[in-house]
Image 1 (cartoon, rainbow, N blue to C red):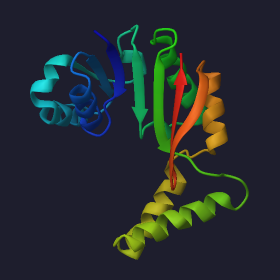
Image 2: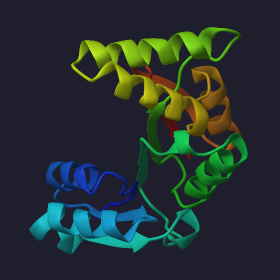
Image 3: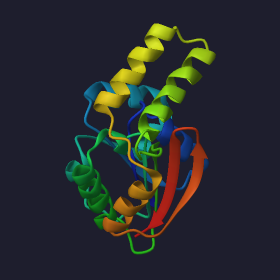
Image 4: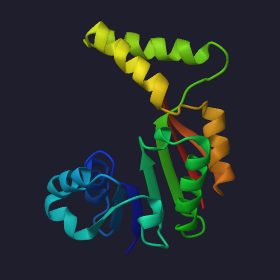
Amino acid sequence: MRRCWCSARGGGLELKALAEAYPGWTFVGVDPAEQMLRLAERTLGPLGTRIELVQGYIEDAPPGPFDAATCLLTLHFLDAAERRRTASNIHRRLRRGAPFVAAHGSFPQEAGQRALWLSRYAAFAVASGVDPEQADKARTAVDASVNMFSPERDETLLREAGFSDVNLFYAAFTWRGWIGYA
């Protein structure tokens, strides 16, 4: 039986997809928000018997070892030092050679690039039907409170956390996904 660590962010949708795809696996989902964990319980339904939900952060997760780990749409909320620390703690909980998948916002940050990409972010939202004022507020909020780094810096942070063979496997607009191995 394999055991996988996951960030539970998103109310359990990731955990549900993984539990359905891998019926012989057990999972641990970690999230600091109690309401997200309660939503995850409801989302998981009977699949929840194979999933341990932990309220807290990586330090609160069981020590492992785990056969795989994911962290989706979470790391971009952390500054560089906290991101490296979190990824290092995930790495320590994995068996040697175990895969780690991380996906989050990441786009070029060179002079003028951040503003350009955030403007594109807002324009895409407007083109998708979002009120222009709301899209601009979202752009401003992301600029002020989300730690987007360049894809190269994100890859470097994962390597510094101990992961090897780190490769970008997904890119769509401002989103990137990497796989690395413990």
